Image 1 (cartoon, one colour):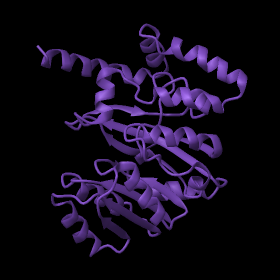
Image 2 (cartoon, helix red, strand yellow):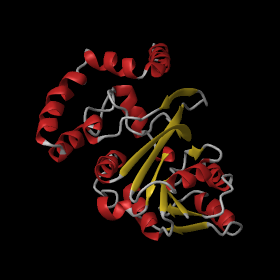
Image 3 (cartoon, helix red, strand yellow):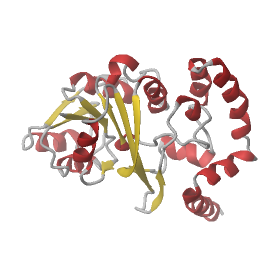
Image 4 (spheres, helix red, strand yellow):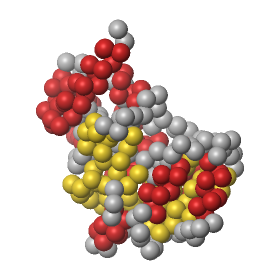
Length: 279
């Protein structure tokens, strides 16, 4: 069974499309666990209407301590051996669950399975495709401008048993919770990357990820320094030396776009739009 966990708070604009994205997978062994944070808009009304019709939907609505706490509550409810996280404003490509389930049949436990993710802007324009194929700890610790992280959980899945070794999402983190989990997961899981597009992520204006992209900020930089301790000594020193070089204002754009040429034009377009809109 695949368990999909969706945390939501006041998400009436997106929750119906999110629920339909899971339904449209037409996958028989499935549960969609929706954790609502006591929304004050129509979110609960929409969830209830779908849950009455589709028995694979399980949900609760109560106050929580934020996104990571909501996700952990959903994970604790999960009964499937494969786990996915779907944020309320994201969705899956067609046929992903069948494909993922087939791949997991050949993977050892625990496994972490990653695909590509389309990144869209507010107007429905495809900005770029996130292809995080460098997923070893030492690579990720060089920073996302050199080795991009999986940008959104709609494009990755894991054995539920993996969280017995990594622990659940750190509830003290509200901005960098995904990166923290990723850096723990790649140390203990069998990692499998597939060059296939599985998820769709909306880079909406005003969100934390959008603000990071606009400012060039890596909000997880302190985590990268913290997790260096988990590397062998020789790798630890190499990463400590290379990280500031690879993330300097001069070298970062050169290294990043050399490794990810498909993202150059979308970034230039975004910068030009900001320039014209600000004048």
